[in-house]
Structures are given as structure tokens and as C-alpha cells.
Length: 254
Length: 86
Image (cartoon, rainbow over all chains, first blue to last red):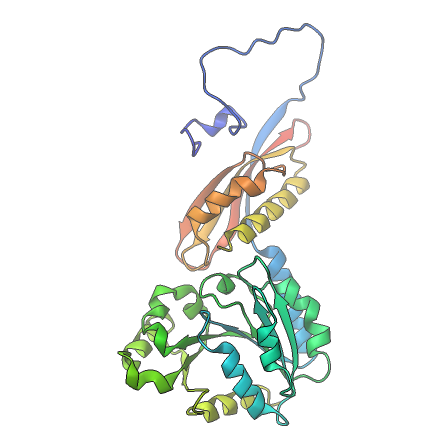
């Protein structure tokens, strides 16, 4: 059925058609050839994002060959991805060789904030795109993560929806959720929270000033992904940072 | 709104299949969209015709079947081939 008018698609190439009740005359008598056209249905199971997935697989094998663990950090804008990374890079300096690919629609503000902390940092400005894709990340890998880097952070565009759909070739996704966003984002945006085996709850220092319940938040997280690994921290006060840093160090242990 | 990127990837894959099948035009595409695929079917519909405009899928009918997981794949395509090409 045609989605515009309900006519049968068996009538032929339906779009650009029009409905009327006169016949189309064909007022010439020269010979010409309309090659007969046959419509056939092909059954297949072809991934829509096959192209991105192929780039992502290539990235993953490049990372594995070079001994790099890559994590894809995804959250709303303002959750504190960059601030957490600033504090994380400072603590890992001299202990783990790190690199960051950070994505924003515009500006290199994040890259500037993250530079000078011992990590290779590269900014991607997507301009009109709401997510990073595997080809863009892959093009930067040799330059960013080529020289003995052990841990690559990919800071995605601040957005809870779109970045979840695109595999970048990371080893896994880490979702961040700040206390000011409320407890129920995991059930409102289940795609991301279902895909992320690790969640970092940020801005825990603000809990005394908010009507925010940790047990409720954990309950929602477990509804969407049972057994999810959750960190509670405040990058600002440093509370909970030790456990996060220890975890990252264990990730890259040979 | 990343459905523009999804629609572009969809048409790109469909055109590849079309070429493999020596199709002259692509008349219809059936896509399975999972509820956890991160793709909004209405938004996909909105941009599909626009993206298809300059391709062999111009005017193709998009059919979307919903599923419950992360599915996002082309299930079938209707293509027009010149007889004798099959």
C-alpha cells in the first residue's frame, strides 16, 4: 500500500504517480523500445549501518593490535564528562599513558581544557552532526593512540540518544548520569543505558541539596541493565574518584 | 535527530544491493527497526524521501516493521530489473 494514498504498489512505480480517470494517449506510430521491466522481491538481512560497523570493526582490531583499551563516554550535555576527564587525566598522569578524542558540535573548548595533563588530545567538531561515527574516529587513531597509549577515552557529543546508535569500535560504552538530571533518565533513555555495562553517577556532592534518591536511581539502572557496574563520585570534591581510578588502572593491566 | 545519517546509510546499502541485482530502480525497501535501536521510525520516514531523491531509490516505498530489540536491518527490497537480467 502506498503510504500517501493507499493505492496498491503492484501498480508500478508509485511515487510521482497521480490519480485521475482519463487514459494516457500515446499518439505516435514510430517504433520504440520500452524494455520490459520485471519487479522482483529480494529477501535479505542487511544491516543499515553496515558501513559504520565495518569501520568500527577495523578500529577495534587496530586498537587491539596496538594494545589500547578504548571507552566511549556518553551522556547529556552538562553531565560533567570533560570535568571528570580533567580530574582523571591528572590522577593517571605518570601511571597510565592516556589519550582523548573529544567530540562537540562546535569549538575546541574541551580539547583546551584537557591539554597539558600528559595525554594526547584531539578535538572533533561535528558541525551539524549529533554523534561521532566510526570513520571519523578511525582517521584519528594512528595520530592519537599510536605511541604507546594504553587507555583511550572517546568523549562523545553530549546527547543521550544519537551517539548510542553508532559503534565507534570502542571496547565498551560508559554512560554518565549526573544527580541534577533526576533518577529516571535510565528508563526514559533505555537505549544507551541498556548498552553501557558501566555507569558513572556524577555530581554526588550535590545530593544534599536535591530531591534525588540513590536507591531509586540504582533501581532504574538495574531495570534497564541488570547487574550494571555503577560508580558514585564527585570529580569536584574527589569523593569516589579513587575507586574509578583503580578500576581504570585494572582495565589496562597487561 | 540522527535519522538523516541512518537514512543515508540505508539508501547506500540499498543501492549496493540494487547494483548487485542489476536493478534499474528500487521500488520498495522494508526495514526492521528495533525499539532499542535508537532510531525513530517517524523521523526516518520524514527524511527518507528527501535522501532518496537523487538516487535509484527515488520514490521508493519505505515499509517499517517494528521489533523489540536493537534490530536495524533491511529485510527485503522490491527492485525493477529489465527482463532477461534476472
